[in-house]
Each structure stands twice: as C-alpha cells, then as structure tokens.
Length: 187
Image 1 (cartoon, rainbow, N blue to C red):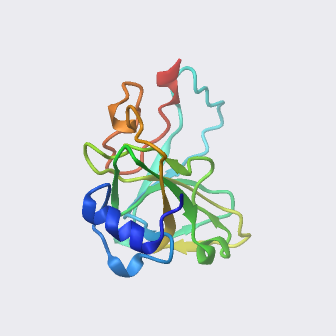
Image 2 (tube, rainbow, N blue to C red; image 1 turned 90 degrees about the vertical axis):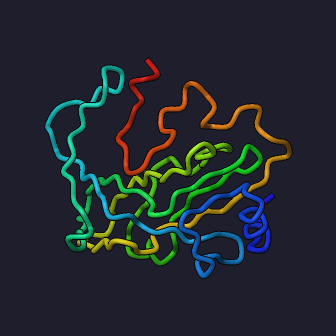
C-alpha cells in the first residue's frame, strides 16, 4: 500500500524510513521531494561501443554545482545523486519519480532505475543515483540543492527475507554519490 504523509512521518519516527537530512516541509500528501546534490558526472562521447560484459568503458567529466549551475543540453546523459541519504527497512520499498515541474522542463531524472528495494541503505543510508537527460530542445540549468525528484513509499505485505544491503550481489550498497554502471559484475 502507498504510504500517506502521516504514514511516512510515522515510519521515519519508527526508523523504518531514514532520510538524512529530513526536511518536514518537503513531505507532500503521499511522497517526499528530494534534492540534487552538487556532484555531476557528464557522459563524454567516446566514439566506441560500450560493452557491459567487459566492464563499462564510459568516460565522464565531473562538474560541481557548488561552482555554479550546469546547463544540461539536449541529448546529454548525466549521473547525479540525491542530496538526501536514504535508508529503508526490510518492510519498506520506495519508488523514485521526477517532479512534474522538472518534467515540464523536459528533464528526465531516471531511465529505468525507479524502484528502491527494501533494505536499501539499511546498513548505511545511501544516496540514490539519478540518470538525468534532457529532451528539451534548449539548455536548462541544473542547480545544487534543487528539488528534482520525489520518493513514494510502499509497505510490503511481509518483510523481505534479505534486504538489498544484505544480499551478496548488491553492487551499489553504501554509495555516497553518483556511481557509473557496475553491470559487468554480473557476467
């Protein structure tokens, strides 16, 4: 079941949802707005085939939003991360979605990685990597700390046997900033 604002606040108090820092004003009727952190990894065009089986050969330029905004251009692919660190118990899962105001600017904040598994950040609250792109035909500024996405939370019918952080195959546990793909660990 989707958690309401009252449920979200209760599960935060119980420790089943951890959001650091927690800003009560960012809680909506059934979600919480989360912000963009300062570090961006901007994918470089390398003119070679990316082979996920042999290790990811993507190259990135780093940009710090502390130095000023970044103008995302049409077709850019950027890895960013949430300012907030998230932790979920084995009874809670979350869904990451873009905010309507960001979507109306043509900014997409995730490609496919919208599900935050139960037990994510349970050991150490962790940032979420955002897969940011633009379909706007014009550049759009991204700012440090801007509200860029929202999290909705769901209570599972029963706790997961093993949460994300407790699985040996978990590739992104305890991340503290944007991380490129680790798909090659699966081959």
